[in-house]
Length: 125
Image (cartoon, rainbow, N blue to C red; front, side, top):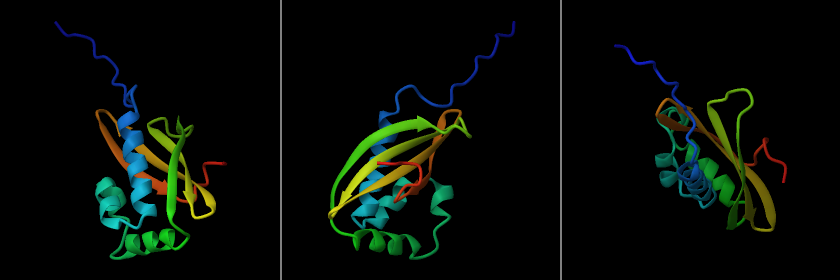
Protein backbone atom coordinates (compact mmCIF):
# COMPACT_ATOMS: atom_id res chain seq x y z
CA UNK A 1 0.00 0.00 0.00
CA UNK A 2 1.46 3.33 -1.07
CA UNK A 3 0.95 6.28 1.23
CA UNK A 4 0.36 9.68 -0.34
CA UNK A 5 3.34 12.00 -0.24
CA UNK A 6 2.87 15.12 1.80
CA UNK A 7 4.23 18.36 0.38
CA UNK A 8 7.49 19.47 1.98
CA UNK A 9 7.35 22.93 3.45
CA UNK A 10 10.63 24.54 2.61
CA UNK A 11 10.45 27.59 4.87
CA UNK A 12 10.18 26.66 8.56
CA UNK A 13 7.55 28.26 10.78
CA UNK A 14 10.16 29.39 13.30
CA UNK A 15 12.82 31.59 11.70
CA UNK A 16 14.52 32.70 14.93
CA UNK A 17 17.67 30.63 14.26
CA UNK A 18 18.07 32.19 10.83
CA UNK A 19 17.39 35.69 12.12
CA UNK A 20 20.12 35.22 14.76
CA UNK A 21 22.58 33.94 12.14
CA UNK A 22 21.75 36.87 9.84
CA UNK A 23 22.34 39.36 12.65
CA UNK A 24 25.60 37.64 13.56
CA UNK A 25 26.76 38.01 9.94
CA UNK A 26 25.88 41.72 9.82
CA UNK A 27 27.69 42.36 13.12
CA UNK A 28 30.79 40.44 11.98
CA UNK A 29 30.96 42.34 8.68
CA UNK A 30 30.50 45.73 10.30
CA UNK A 31 33.08 44.98 13.00
CA UNK A 32 35.65 43.89 10.40
CA UNK A 33 35.67 40.23 11.43
CA UNK A 34 35.91 38.72 7.95
CA UNK A 35 36.89 35.21 9.12
CA UNK A 36 33.80 35.00 11.33
CA UNK A 37 31.58 36.38 8.56
CA UNK A 38 33.02 33.97 5.99
CA UNK A 39 32.23 30.95 8.17
CA UNK A 40 28.57 32.00 8.42
CA UNK A 41 28.11 32.07 4.63
CA UNK A 42 27.02 29.15 2.49
CA UNK A 43 29.60 27.64 0.14
CA UNK A 44 28.14 29.29 -3.01
CA UNK A 45 28.39 32.72 -1.37
CA UNK A 46 31.91 32.00 -0.11
CA UNK A 47 32.92 31.07 -3.66
CA UNK A 48 31.95 34.54 -4.92
CA UNK A 49 34.82 36.16 -3.02
CA UNK A 50 38.34 36.30 -4.36
CA UNK A 51 41.31 36.34 -2.01
CA UNK A 52 41.18 39.47 0.12
CA UNK A 53 37.88 40.76 -1.32
CA UNK A 54 35.86 40.12 1.85
CA UNK A 55 38.63 41.64 3.97
CA UNK A 56 38.50 44.78 1.80
CA UNK A 57 34.71 44.96 2.17
CA UNK A 58 35.03 44.69 5.94
CA UNK A 59 37.71 47.38 5.94
CA UNK A 60 35.38 49.65 3.96
CA UNK A 61 32.54 48.99 6.39
CA UNK A 62 34.65 49.79 9.46
CA UNK A 63 36.02 52.97 7.88
CA UNK A 64 32.52 54.50 8.20
CA UNK A 65 32.72 54.49 11.99
CA UNK A 66 32.28 52.20 14.95
CA UNK A 67 29.28 49.87 15.00
CA UNK A 68 27.00 50.95 17.83
CA UNK A 69 23.98 48.70 17.31
CA UNK A 70 22.22 46.30 14.96
CA UNK A 71 18.44 46.22 15.32
CA UNK A 72 16.14 43.70 13.62
CA UNK A 73 13.42 45.46 11.60
CA UNK A 74 11.48 42.75 9.76
CA UNK A 75 11.57 39.58 7.72
CA UNK A 76 9.65 38.72 4.59
CA UNK A 77 9.40 36.08 1.90
CA UNK A 78 10.77 37.26 -1.43
CA UNK A 79 7.89 37.96 -3.82
CA UNK A 80 9.75 36.60 -6.86
CA UNK A 81 11.29 33.52 -5.26
CA UNK A 82 9.04 32.03 -2.62
CA UNK A 83 11.92 29.91 -1.26
CA UNK A 84 13.86 32.95 -0.03
CA UNK A 85 13.48 34.87 3.22
CA UNK A 86 15.01 38.32 3.60
CA UNK A 87 15.92 39.74 7.02
CA UNK A 88 16.17 43.53 7.32
CA UNK A 89 18.31 45.27 9.96
CA UNK A 90 18.93 48.88 11.01
CA UNK A 91 22.62 49.42 11.75
CA UNK A 92 23.91 52.38 13.75
CA UNK A 93 27.44 53.10 12.56
CA UNK A 94 29.09 56.21 13.92
CA UNK A 95 26.48 58.94 13.43
CA UNK A 96 24.79 57.12 10.52
CA UNK A 97 21.88 54.70 10.36
CA UNK A 98 22.37 52.20 7.53
CA UNK A 99 19.96 49.49 6.37
CA UNK A 100 21.24 45.96 5.81
CA UNK A 101 19.66 42.77 4.59
CA UNK A 102 20.58 39.10 4.61
CA UNK A 103 18.93 36.49 2.38
CA UNK A 104 18.43 32.81 3.12
CA UNK A 105 17.30 30.30 0.54
CA UNK A 106 15.41 27.17 1.62
CA UNK A 107 15.30 23.89 -0.30
CA UNK A 108 13.58 20.94 1.33
CA UNK A 109 15.22 20.54 4.72
CA UNK A 110 18.29 22.63 3.89
CA UNK A 111 18.95 26.35 4.19
CA UNK A 112 21.65 28.52 2.67
CA UNK A 113 22.80 32.02 3.57
CA UNK A 114 23.16 33.22 -0.01
CA UNK A 115 23.36 37.03 0.01
CA UNK A 116 23.74 40.22 1.99
CA UNK A 117 23.81 43.89 1.16
CA UNK A 118 24.99 46.86 3.22
CA UNK A 119 23.53 49.38 2.62
CA UNK A 120 20.44 47.50 1.55
CA UNK A 121 18.45 48.38 -1.54
CA UNK A 122 15.51 46.36 -0.15
CA UNK A 123 14.98 48.44 3.00
CA UNK A 124 13.86 51.98 3.57
CA UNK A 125 14.47 53.12 7.14
